[in-house]
Length: 190
Image (cartoon, rainbow, N blue to C red; front, side):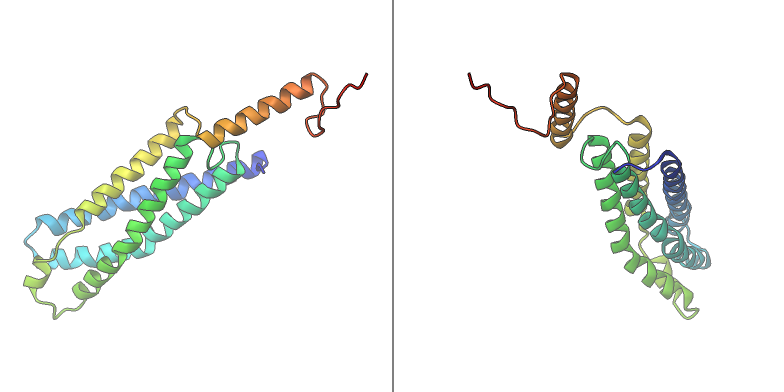
């Protein structure tokens, strides 16, 4: 099933918006994460954790889920398909993995944000908190890789995509010879 051109353009606009929004929200989160990793000011760390919690739960998670859903809609509703081209399949798998890692990290982020929001939390506890830099940097790299794959669309069919292409070619060859590809060939009885 393919989408009409008008629906496809709308779906693409929504997908690009939420995907780039996800990337931008991760950049904002990373700036705060770097603050947690590099400052000795407990109030700055407190504010950074609170903001990281807000960004993660209010922006990154919804944008990640929206990107995953709209990417699936784009894959299933266009000629690219989900399993036909390696770049689509790899992009989808990376998006799923990034979303799963994000969802697993939200527990830590939420608890650190909640702890930072309590004024009685000791400065030492805030300053000894571990930033989530490996995940935020890794997430940014993965999202950038997905963007590159989606812009360049490197060639390469999956085995499933190759079989589908061969089936389409056989059908087209049959139509050009006047054969009905849906009927079994008749035998000549002489």
